[in-house]
Length: 399
Image (cartoon, rainbow, N blue to C red; front, side):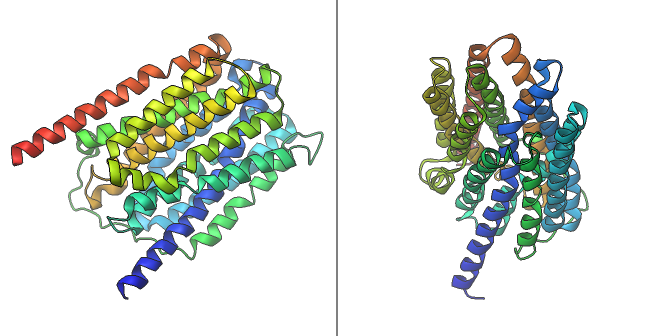
């Protein structure tokens, strides 16, 4: 195969992964727009409104372990098909909980939904594997940019189908969301995905990988990026409801946030190539801090929208940067275990912030919830600076 044909095939695979990411992300973004509102209506204790989201993120964290096993033994396609099946099952169980008006059943839907979402997070790693080293940052960012389509599909389904099967608000939405994973599975059948990596005779212990400065900086940047974003995003529909805004208004804000999360993906790879991964992560942290400042200065629709747009762009810069930095922390044969360990840490943090979001919002208020993100951002930047300093010292010693 000529170099031109190989490059065209590579880009085709990246765009197909973009489509898969878009379809799988739509369910999650729709759930963000609905989950806290449904939880608030079904739970007797209103501080548990975000418990379904917390359980979904906990399942997302746990998904990294079976996903790592399946990816390692059977390859990417088998793992992604398993994730599509989980996402479809989750939407159907959510629908059952809404139909029965049962908070427990609704919470149970978060388990398969979280499994599906957790496995879908590996599309960015698959993009790195199908791309050449020079194209890798753009491939990662482009696949994550599939969330732009998710940002349109998810909230629009919520807005236009929430009343479809009244008196069961949102029941029709979950039934429609259950149709997206089978479409994703069909696309996966025509993507050229890498085979399972060769198994090492003596595998590098995961703890040894995790001790590497590049892994620590990448993992903490990802943990803070996703954890902070989820903390604020999850409670935004609740705060807007308390301020008198309806479902359509909060869905629009979440939609703007989701677009801001993924639209920069078309340029983030180029920014990393031009300015370096650490500068992009720092810029993301500054934008995320700006979200907190805007959020505490007012409760108008414009304040909510501007805050979550800043939050989305900041998340993109930090998370894409962290993914690229992680790729420098492991050998090819270590990739599945390194990626699984990273996602356990990232989505464990997200699970904690999803649960904490409802409790902190209910008991401490919107201002405390937003200002509380600043120390975490400072910690991530400190570790990133330490890792960069370690790298410079090592290069000087070798030179």
